[in-house]
Image (cartoon, rainbow, N blue to C red; front, top):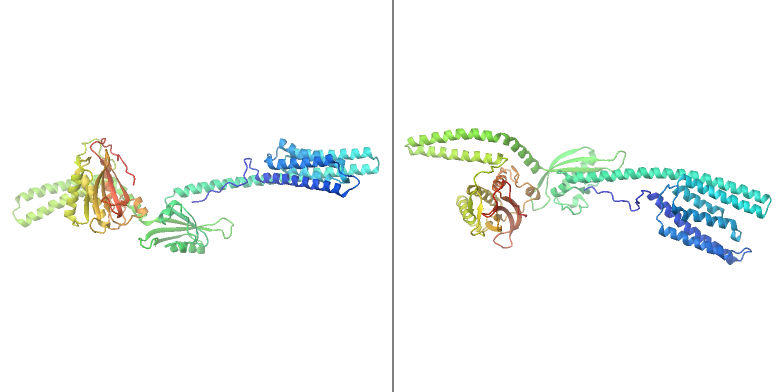
Length: 568
């Protein structure tokens, strides 16, 4: 989602990247200055002036150039503000020695006093105030020493002017050191504040990323041209985008995104929060996805033209399912008591009807009595279903589950379902667990198989073999019962909530069938799941397969929890 700010390419452990760049600049300037000095002295000799430059002075400058180049290439830069650092000896110290020798000897009759500005600047910018003032004091003493030597060589008024010049130059170095040191301190404070702000921004970006990725609500970020900039995993799922896929360059280039772009444009135009329901046709052949879209405008205070639009996306079908689940939770707290209260009058009605049926002779009246008996049985079954849904903790420690011959029981229940619903050609039995016995109640297994066949018939094409009931063996302790149909692939949002109560892709379905199947499977230590795959009988057809992993007769006793989960 939100991208974490990358580390700065010039970041250093001590957090002084600006001063490292200044250090590199000074080191480069030293190399360049040494090259200029060498070229100047060689040029003096080539011009043949009265005072040629001695070879040892040229050798000293060559050595200075080599030392400056080594410092530039090998030393990374010292810690800013240090009172003393051995690294400064190889730079500022060398500069003072070489420049003092040149100023004292004055080869070719040249003056080199201006060169002392470089070490003073380096000390003031990169060192502490003590180092800067010490360097300025050293330069002043060296200039005074040079004037004193001149006085010894040629006493007179010219020597006095040299002392005055040396003093003024020394004072200038002190003033320069103080001013540059103050500027360097201010730069250090501002950089520290900037780095603290950058660190806080990086941390906030990381927190935002973690929060938005964990949201179950989809978040889509668009700029002023309705161009998508970011989307969290929930939004990618709702909009059929892969987790690693790039976002489209324009909302209009993606099928079905135009309503989202229109909401963003309207939000930018009005500056208000909008709430709208829409149906997006993300696939020309697939169903429309119903979404609840809420937009908000995000803009930095005082910023102009830097606003972003956030679209919060929610699947309306999930919202409705969540509402139904909450209703189920409220209903579950009272369903057990109500079911028992209903069961008692039903028992009385059933008993009274049985007694009345013994005295009835008229065929019509006996038919009415039979109708009452059938509906009482139906109501009793409904009460049991409600108790199955509402029961949170399954019965444990009771009688051991029945041991069934899987192929025989499945064949019998499948034949009963076909006889009741018809369509025998569409349903094909593929047995593959001969002699395998499973631990499951026969009536509960029938209930699971009937629910799965009802779902398969709802979406299958109806052609021969479009529904297949298969059995098989996963290993010696797990047997599989699979109901496969050639229906279209389930949407990702539907697959995510398949076994939740009251969740259904059709309004006419209660959404309890698969939930009850899961509850019954877990009661017997089995597990149920879904996957998209080929038909059990072979061939190229691909469809939806609901599988039940059952405990065989060799498996350990049930513990009230599914003992196995078969990965799709």
